[in-house]
Structure formats: C-alpha cells, structure tokens
Length: 318
Image (tube, helix red, strand yellow):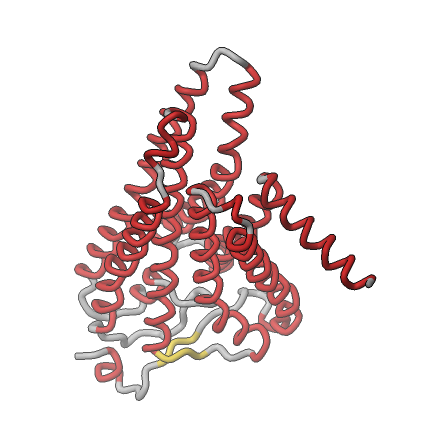
C-alpha cells in the first residue's frame, strides 16, 4: 500500500525543520540565506557564461568545469523552494510527492557532481602524467560522451531510491530533521520494512560516491608520484598549482558528505542542530565555493570576468 493510504492522511505531508533553537528568527535568517543563494546562482551562471562566450576556454578542462557549475546550479535549485519557503514564509509543510521529487533531484545532482569530479581528476591525471598525449586522449567528443554517461548514471542509479520509498507506509511523526528532503531522513519515519530501501540506498552510495572517491584518490596518488618524479622545483610547483582548484572542489564536496553519512549512521544521539548544520554544509557550501575558487585560481576565467566588468564600467560612463 502507498504511504498516503496507510496513514490515512490525504495527502500525506511532512514537516520540515528550520534551524533548531532559532524558530523565532526565521525571518531574519532569510536575508543571509537569500544572499547565499544569490551568490550561488550568480557565481555558477557567470562561470557558464564565461566559458560559453570565450573560445579560448573551449577545452576539455573548462568543459568539465561548466558541467560542475551546471551540477551546482541543479543542486542549488533543488533546495531553494523549501529553504526559502521556511525562512521567508514560515511554511514548514511539504507534500509527500513533492518531498520525494526534491529528494530525487538532490541525490541525483549530488551523484552527477561526484561523477564530474572524477572526470576532472582524470583530466588532471592525463595533463600531468601524459602531457604529450593530452590533446589526443581528451577530445571534445570524449568529454561530451563522458558528460552523458555521468548524467545518465546519476539519473538511473537514484531513480529506484525514489520508486522504493513511495511504496513504504509512514505512520510515525512526520517531522524531518532538515529544511529539505533527504533519503535517510525520510526513511527514518517509515514504519514498514525498510531493509530493501536501506540496502539499495547503501548500494547506490557505494556505486557512485564510494567508487568515485576511490578513483579520485587513486588518480592523485599517481599524480603526486609523477610530480615528485619531476626534477625541477618550479615544474613541481606549476603542476601542483593546476590541481589546487580541483582539490578544493573535492574537499568541500566530500568532507561534509562523509560527515553527514557518519552522523546519519552513528550519531543519532547528537543534537538536531548538528544534523541540520552538516546537511546544510553538504548542500550549500560546494555551490557557493566552487565558482569563487575557480574564478580566483584560474587566470583565464579571472581575466575574462575582469574584462567584462571593465567593459560594462566603460559603457556606463559613455
């Protein structure tokens, strides 16, 4: 039986949580939160526009960066409706179907972003370990095909998660621990047998982020070995500098993800505030920091953005 039939609610609704302990201050939290989303949207859209309009950036590395920006945009837009509804309008309720849809897109774009980070690690591996073969190996056609595979993997692996959870009965408290719908959080409220859901959820994480993190680690082990084998200190510094932006993107994505997974599995005794802040960091920090880091560390993008700002300033003066 479906969740709504089992519980007697028509339709079944969940209650989202803002920030525990700040329930009277939601309206004041809306301003910094809206500013954060504005930075996310502006930063990632600027990256996409810069790469699209500058032909010198039509290379494999920047194609992959545009995919990362698109995944960050998808992740931001997935959480935007419920977050702003809570903090602007104090609307805590979300229907079951809407919650499942939001959960699906959050986990789907998260899996896509993880796959893009793997492709970017491979890009850096080829560029540093096999620089002479870089142009012949990483063609634009290969990057487009890799992007398609990464997208389809995210869509297909996460889809059964949404299908399975729709079949569960929900008869406990409908209070979620976050300002958006996550699979582990929804599963906690089910009163049926969740073993299949838990097993597939774990399998999906292993097939995506588990394998991805191991692949990235292996890539960087080989990259470090290649860099250390370089005689020139200047060449080492230059090679390592090309990896800093990607390393930052990997860290800001995987550290909150690992922390959130550990808390969901073993930290049930921890305060709700800890769960909330870790989930917010997992979904909000990467889309904010990635465009800032790449704009700061990538000379071509920084120069293009500065040129645009200078041109607009000149136009306004005229």
